[in-house]
Length: 373
Image: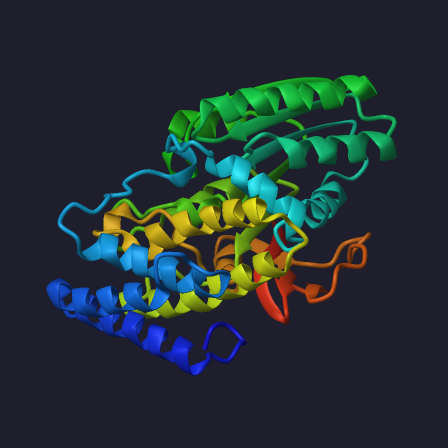
């Protein structure tokens, strides 16, 4: 099955070929996977039809896995020099797919954490171009005329994105007469060192933390060492007002290769159907699929485990992690749920999270958290 959609007879044949290739690769027989992938390529044909997009994405990823000269994909997708940068494709997705535009939900939770403070600090991990943070500052300033100053610590591995974020945020704060200190940190989350954490510990105004589709990139430095737990433990030591986490709700982290394939097949199958149904041009749909093709390539097509950067975890795993690291997760806040959505798109506000999805399948989960105790 592709998500919640039944497969046609031809679809079942194509899916069976993918499963055959996955089984051979998992058993250490990559050469024996090639005939299934070659047969699949013939069934798909030279022109990939929209209904065959998922089969082609996974065929290409598995071919990369078995070919001698496959691409290693050894870096974070947001730092690779694509003709179409991943961050630009992400913003295209937020335009056409409501479950990707989590900014309103995230900002409602962050605003509730900031409250009526006249000065605060925002640590934003994976700040990108700063669009969500700009909307937050506009909303806070409009609702709180007493806001006079804010500090934004932007963490992102791409320096150009950080420069764009600073320009975006300075424009937003200037419109409201709010002073801004912007501190760029050109790193991924697990690269924050003792000096970075010491600098954060010196913040003497209310601190809120935002991490949007960023922490799933974290890789454990050694077996038995959970970099994500350590990140949240160090955050807890800062005693922030709150944290808001936004992540894809699927598991591609520590599960076996076959399970990773099945989990991603269901998850991205849902997204591909939503893209095909979106009121977008064919070119825009192809661009959106490119974003996820790169993710599939990394999740399924990486040739070694240390080359995988797309290591998503289920929302329940993040919630449990937050709890054991000293936070209390929540999903409800004033202003939620958001406005009505197009048909088939959903927002569900639950005690521990807010789920955004398509046809009853959750895609993104937004989790607020406050220090426990």
